[in-house]
Length: 146
Image 1: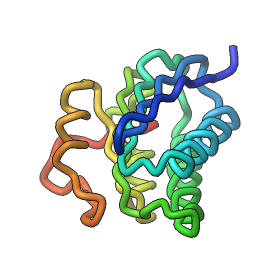
Image 2 (image 1 turned 45 degrees about the horizontal axis):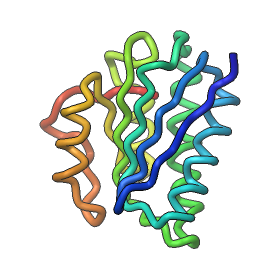
Image 3 (image 1 turned 135 degrees about the vertical axis):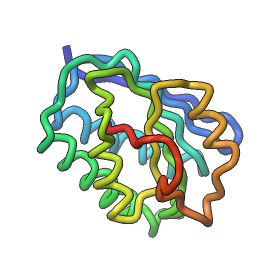
Image 4 (image 1 turned 30 degrees about the vertical axis):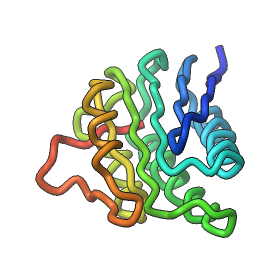
């Protein structure tokens, strides 16, 4: 089963529901689709609910996905997407990595992203995170990987 997503733009929030078995190639493809929707709708925040994604990504896949996501966000700057735009990922283990490695990779490359196991905490973080001030995760709960 390939990965797919349903997206809904609401005010400044793009809500994404992703499903399917994780593969790096598919994850990259749907990330680009998501970024196209961000640019089209002028979203300022993204909530990706990936709790229905299955699989167990390898550490190197987490690295490559985090690197790709940060690079892609940077490339969309010329389309009006703020580089510091917050992305909240809601995932379940084992797609969710307890060490938050993929998130760390993306944050270290300038992306404002945080992963959660809990939808409510993700929404709280999105509500309090400014587009102009990236959250590096310092002093907060562990980072999650997508």
